[in-house]
Image (cartoon, rainbow, N blue to C red; front, side):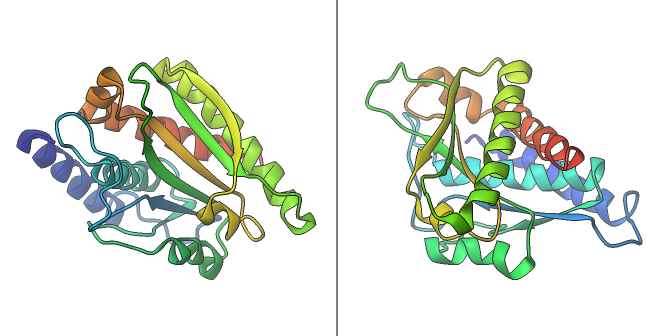
Length: 221
C-alpha cells in the first residue's frame, strides 16, 4: 500500500478515536458487543497481491475503520478487536475474545485468492455443523450473513458468492457461544478487486457496508 494511503488511513483512525473519546462519549453501558477479528498478522501475511501488498494489512485497516464508524454512529455497540496492530495471533486465541467478553457477534475478516484470476465477489462463511448446541447461533449467523450479502450487493455492487458452509477453526471454536461468520472481502488474485481493496475508497466502502450490516442486525434483534 502506498505511503500516502497509509498516512491518510492513520489520520482517519486517529481522528475517529479522538471523536470517540469526546464528541461521542456515552455514559451508559453498551447494549451489544461485537468482536472484529482481522485475519492473519505478524509473520502470517495471508495472501499477497501482484504488487506485493499483504492481506493482513487490509484486514486490519477495515477492522479499525469499523470500530471508528461504530463508535461514531452506534455507541450502543461495543467493539473489540482481536488485534489492533501487526501481530500474529494463533487461531485458537481469536474466538476467546468473544467468549470472554460474552460477545453478541463475531466477525473474522479476510481477503480471498483463487487460481482463476477472474474470480470475484464476496464470500460469507458459516460453520458447517449439525451440533445441537450450535443451531441457535448458526441461525443468527445466517441472518447476519444475509444482511451483509445484501448490503455488499446494493451499496458496493459486489458480486454475491453466497452464504457458504465450511469447517473453519475460528468458526468451529466459536459458534457454540456466539453467532460467528468469516468474511472474504474480495479476491487479491483479481486485479480490479485487489486495486479496490488497496484503495481508500475500497477500504472505506467495505468498512461502511460491514458497519451498516452490524447496525441492521442488532436493530432487528
